Length: 216
Image 1 (cartoon, one colour):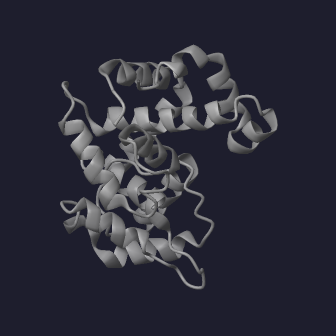
Image 2: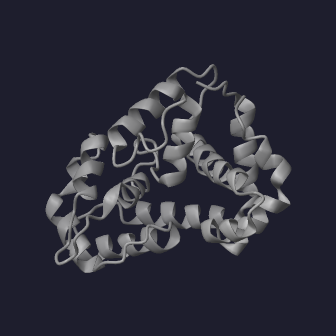
Image 3: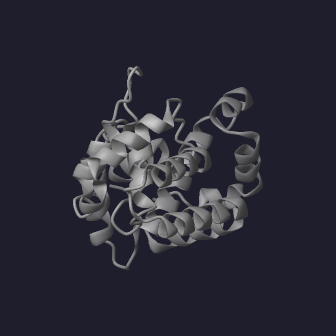
């Protein structure tokens, strides 16, 4: 395991605060999910699905109405106290005729904005960042939210300072991007495949800050 310190988190928070558009997206999602906390009304569920999908890059290229209908049928409002199981249930939704499920990325984000303190966000950046920090093989958390959350909870509980999912979500998301950027830093064509123009420029313009995300 790499040495991880409070400064890494502080730098991540500083970087995130510079990303004004992302901060506004977070505020909007939290506000709308608080206003529509329950998952009984089909239209409210559909609205929340669209928000998460479009604003948090879930790439759900499938019929959102069918997803909303199945979430409604799951009656999830009584299940938020069992995060791992609920994320799994939503992730396994497979709206026919699609041959794939909605997946853990969307599921974790949908649950996260209902209860941020219970559900860490799971995506390719966060899972690769966590595996790097803990010295685990890349891909060890693929389709495994339960292990991802367990290891993240263990990491947070063993810190010498208090942290939260909100702070760790920011750190893992940014650190995961930094790992990819470092790997292809001398290959502009590959960076264009991995990141949008906006993100590439942002990292480039704040490269010294991003370098401080590295654990030792």
